[in-house]
Image (cartoon, rainbow, N blue to C red; front, side):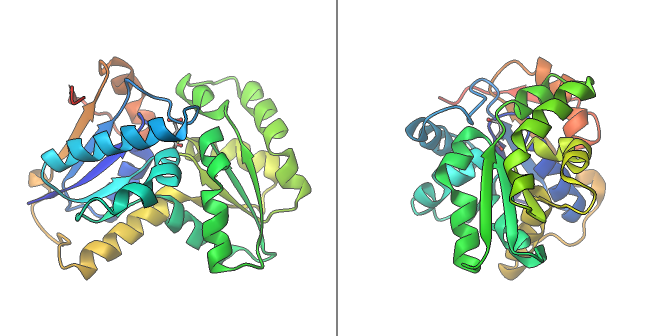
Length: 266
Ligand code: DGL
């Protein structure tokens, strides 16, 4: 059985793995977290493209049938560019998230938050425009969110203050829908809701991407529909020592991971 390959700049992609595992319980998953080089969100385009290519080549060596770029930064910068060099289907998180936002907005004002690199590309914005040019998109980078989540900040006030500051332009633009355009942001849903108001519709790309992967596998006739769950494999690889990954994984995934392999591939 061939697996689905998933990569992210680090640990955040586990929010996508969580959804994939929920919606595709019979699929094997091989994950790669590029923890030695995280974060991608602060880096330049050419570096992110290079890292993306290297991650894809690693996954191809694991004999996968489908690749998911769980990282919003890598998806927005590198997906369109690298896709044409590979035969294997590769999907990112941008299009699925954009589609869902277009579907659910009522007032046609959509907000996007992500890393500095993601926001700079305006990838979500151009996808939304393509689907419905009448939608007004307001985007904001929230660079402190990733470290705050990874630090496991329990001091809600720091997160709340950062969110209030970052989300100001989105409140002002009266968006009714907000795309969480970064792997880490689903963990901040309660705070973001508190700042944006109860009625805000939060679009979690992880949820959408999992249902698109499901549809794509089904369309190609390569979806595993039933097999003994004990045979289903979830393999986690990282590029740095696994210590931090192991400590944080449960928060992103909902359960503890006990085996993580450190790999060297560049
Ligand atoms: N995984 C990245 C993303 O979704 C966030 C962490 C990083 O900056 O590498 O954009």
